[in-house]
Amino acid sequence: MLELLFYSTLTCTQTDAIMLKIESNKNLNNQVRIELVEVLKESAPECEWYWDEND
Image (tube, rainbow, N blue to C red; front, side):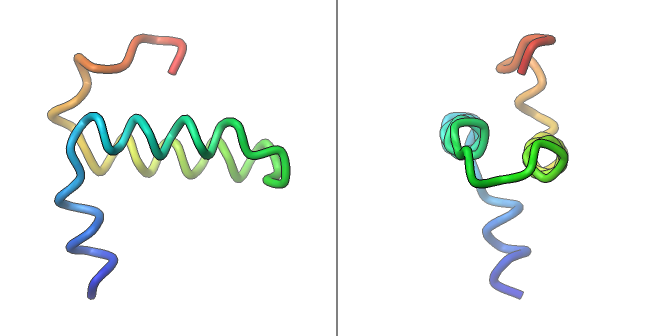
């Protein structure tokens, strides 16, 4: 349940910071990184303006 609260309360800046950490983590498989970033983007639909097409 805590995950849902965390998932729904991130700001655009917090979400972006987490995505940058995921993208820079070399221990994660590339497919896992892509999936995690996509989930984060889905969690913050109000931040669509914040990311460009390359994020």
